[in-house]
Image (cartoon, rainbow, N blue to C red; front, side, top):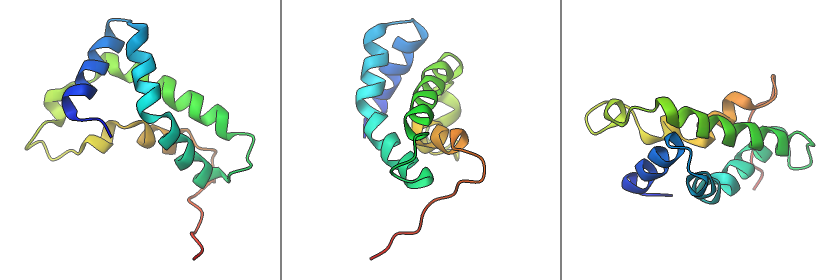
Amino acid sequence: MLDEQHERRIAHGLRDGKTDAWQALYDAYAERVWRGVARLLGPHSTDVADVVQETMMAAARSAATFDAARFGPGSGASRTTMSPCTCANKNAAPGSRPRAKHN
């Protein structure tokens, strides 16, 4: 997990169209997003890669309109509101739902 300052630097870089910001976003979140999507769709689903790609692109695009002040301390919103994992849930196949964990 990135600290808030690093996330803001990435968001600013994405707004400015910097390639290294996209790479930093991907490096920081892609594996976690992949695991989350695989839990939603099943680890062998052929849709996992597509959902992860769409999720990462949506997260990068949303940086252009991200207002950190709206999500700062005391705002009542958590940082997970804007996380790529939140986007993954929105991009998951209709009717999919988290799979139960078996012990």
